[in-house]
Length: 444
Image (tube, rainbow, N blue to C red; front, side, top):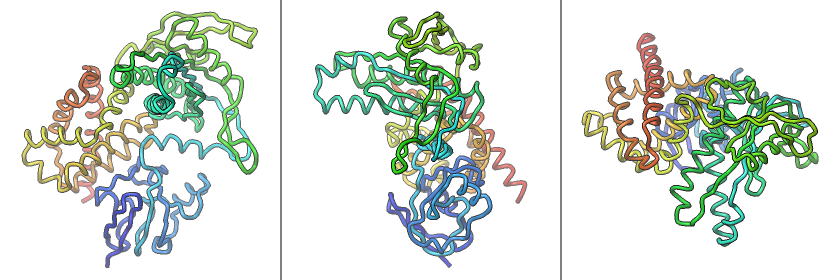
């Protein structure tokens, strides 16, 4: 007996066996991108869906799902796709469309009725030369520039497990650690995000603003401390808020980048809690900050001493995702040239296959900032590929073709450090996938 699952958004209906598979399994079997960081083990909330029709055609919530639902305060229409087994026709909506949205889910874990004091890292970024840019361009052009600025520079915050707290004119504020994490991780996430934002601005200047006779610059200040985090405001209109002295100090530190000429300044608290042995530290300053009586020790961050895997992957992912179809076309042309037999493994068209490939790559890179479920997800991915006919001998071929595709896709932004980062990352990814595939063979 068959049932039908209708996916709104892509308006696609697929058939499945009644009672035999979960909604997530249906997505995977039909090559429909569906986030599931933990590999469909009910330990994360990324595969969530909204049931629009046919709620009675699903099994009751499992204990895992009920615990997740209660913790996240979901309404009854929201379910975990990995825990829902189809008993009849349903109409659903995938609620998490991209990896970037996963980070925003941290806001769910903040209290709705009050603020709680939590240790967080706060990043303030201010755009320079914006006044000159706005004086020679119309309002619609400026709206375009700001949207490109917000998107390009916001992504590094999201990719490093942060939340974009607010935009204030030409300023971006990000926070790290609202849902927990160690002091070192939260501070390093903020520092890595800052470096990624500088890379992103370099791309904007080289590729999108080169014909406008302007070079944008920015300053970033980072602080760490206890702040109040929660939903505040009128009972009918509460908003996510972060308040406290550490936030104000972060803003003042950003202001000092104008006086010192440093691109990124961090407070002593960030320096002491970060893994500073991995950082290239420039000048340090003892400064009086506006509104403060005591002096603050500030440190200039120039970069990382050695290759930072996450930063290099994040830097290139933006371009890979910019034109999924072009990336897929180049990759699969190279793959089929080296391994003609591989054509039989890909039954869907190249555009669809490219969408799945970039979806998978994006999920892996974003998950590196919160690795607790990454291994589970990769093992599940290996099991799925084993079912599709992928053999262990295919993995090194795919790795080499991918690395050879990078220069063609990245163009002037390509650099050897990006190739090295992807090489290391793919070794880890493919080895873990092989573990998953082998565990499936052992069970059978």
